[in-house]
Image (cartoon, protein in one colour):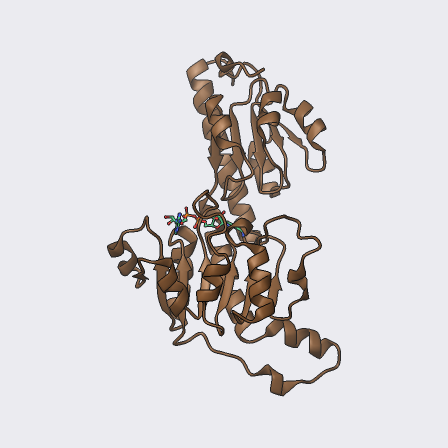
Length: 324
Ligand code: NAD
């Protein structure tokens, strides 16, 4: 049982790392905490490791459920090495007095660059042509593509990543529009983005639609049959945010029936992706949730995470005066 009164550290802090993170983290915390790497353990073993743990660190793979939280007896911090807290029962953790710390700032560039990469790969049919050339087929006439310059990019969610994608797209000479009911029109226009009031209008006029919202009750299946039918048949859909923002069944129907020209997806309703018809389409690019997986982003996440955790531990130690 969690004991809220036990919020003091009376021993060297115990940190459980539930998903692989960069070595940079371990270098910084070495000697200042007991750190256990629990990458390949099942939930049952993970639950027993949580006993006596002060801090748990996860990426997007390991789920920190209510049941797991109940197994912890003195957990104070759940740190998420990245953005998106949908694998953590945040409300329950907070109700138990556990702090949930994301590291949001480190993967902006990585995801934004992947998004632009997807746009170019879709437009120039890079994966299709690559696989044909490797099979000995020199199909130059099939290789006629499209340029980004002059096209309209519709961004759904003009936050950290959406704004960076907008900046990069502007450099390619694109017109950038965005739908985000929580963003100020002035703030959008400062980065050269035209805010659109209705999602349906953005879908109708965009050549590329790129999703950058969090997964919430409001954004779950935000892109379904109705929305896909509004898109131009020449338009591409890109999702590097969270799988369940797109209704995958509806997307498969849209691709089969040619409602849109193609899609690039880094995230899926169920990960890892298994037995999905999405793999059958030539005009669909699929990557295994690697948006934030660059050497630079992973090092940066690990460093920021270690600094935040050390800051937290030191502040508690100062308050308690009991850990040096
Ligand atoms: P952010 O919080 O900075 O921005 C999200 C934006 O979405 C905000 O501006 C918010 O106002 C807007 N928004 C919220 N609800 C909306 C709605 N109903 N309609 C339109 N806009 C809405 O988030 P971020 O850091 O830019 O991250 C964006 C997404 O990218 C998240 O889903 C995150 O999980 C995902 N992500 C994926 C990877 C990856 O590996 N593929 C890595 C990092 C982040």
